[in-house]
Image (cartoon, rainbow, N blue to C red; front, side, top):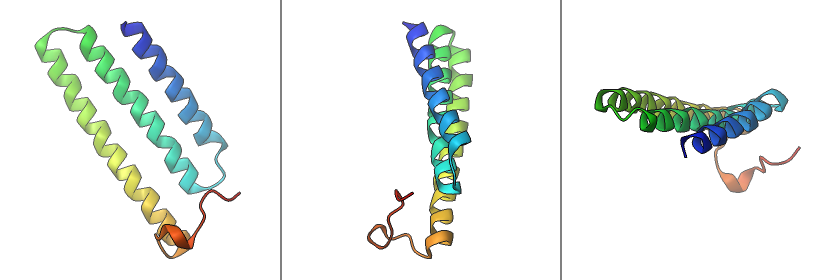
Length: 99
């Protein structure tokens, strides 16, 4: 069961990395970081389940919190870069999915 979690995390990491290296603008690059952070979090959760020792699980939970903070910072960076490029964060004023 633990191998499936690690395989899924590796797949999500590859998808995020592919999106990161093929993105053409900063917003897409920052959005590609989100799956990478989710894969890292999934790895930490899977590894903490492998180590049934209580202290190891607590250490990995701190790592998960640190990755969650990085995800929040990435979300803020996405919003700021949209605001800088479009001069607004209103969804109805811009179409971000245009090529």
